[in-house]
Structure formats: C-alpha cells, structure tokens
Image (cartoon, rainbow, N blue to C red):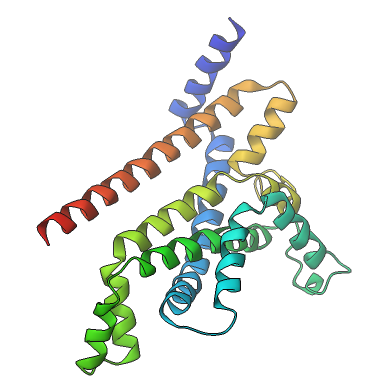
Length: 235
C-alpha cells in the first residue's frame, strides 16, 4: 500500500512539473551532454588513430582502453577528488563540488566507452577502403572522414552507449559533486539521498525518468542496428 501511494505521488510530481524534480533532471542532462560533447571528438579521433596505424605498444594501449571499461566510477571520482581538492594539483580550478567537476568526471567516464567502441567499429571496416582512398590521392583527413562515415553506425552506437554510461553513474557525481541541491544534485545521487531518508516519491519519479532514458537509448541502438543491417543487405 505504501508503495502504491509513493508511486502515485511520484507520478503526480512528474505530471505537475515539480520545480525541484525538473531542476535535478536539468542538471543531469546538462552535465551528461556537456561531458559527452567534450569527450567525443578526442575519443573518436583516438579510436580511429589506434585502429588505423601500427606502432610499438599498440596492443598494450588497446588492452588499457578496454580495461578502462571495467573501472568503477567511484574510483574515477576518488582520483578526481584528489586532483581537484585544495591540496591537489588542480585545486586552483575550484571545480570540486561544482558542475564543472561533474562534467570532468563525465568526460573521463565516457572516454573509455567511446574510444573502445569506435576502435571496434573502425577495425570492422574493410581494410581495402582506406587503401583505395589513399591510392586515389585522398588526404589523411579525407581518408579519416571516409572511414568514419563508413563506420558511422558504430560511432553513433559509441556515442549512445557513452550517454547511457554517464547518465546512470552515481559514484563519481557523488564524490566530485557533493550532491548539492540546485547545483550538483543529479538523478542518481538524488535517488540515493531520498531513499536513504525514506522519501520514496521523488526517488521513484526520478527512477521512472531513468527508465525512460534507458528505453530511449536502447530504442536508438536498435534503430541503428537495423539501419546497419539494411545497409549491408542493400550493398
């Protein structure tokens, strides 16, 4: 009965547009999208470079990139906390317990996902494609754009997966952001706080929002997979 009442109250919060609730959602989307936007160009370029060139230590670098996928976000948060604290080397930035600090955490969380998935997407492309472009006189920049366009479904899947990773993490946002109301409180940290206080209505409402995000992310991935399969069949 209490669960039904809390769920009813949660739906009411969503429908009536509770200001505190939507502030949390806005902070979450803002920091997640900004972190993803900052991480994507570097990660895609690095994934392409590692996949398309041969150099000493390449396998070790690939191994490290894939191993980084398993790093818990709370460990990333701990490292950032030490870097951004007053005694840390980046303490002068004053990013600890602020939105820029959360964004920095989102960047480091998204990087391994974006890099490893882009790397796999580029490696799956027919190696004759860049060779043909090179023979035809294409510049390095043009070859990269051609290869990334060919692997665009994989790159887009990397971006979508990266968004899913950063939108749902809690450890780094809690350690670096501090869960400050109206400033650094995200969906996941708010859920942790509200449930620990026994206030389930807002936690359930935010949980519903996270479920909707998950459904949208997976729907986008399914559409991309379907488009990729259709492209291969038509080719």
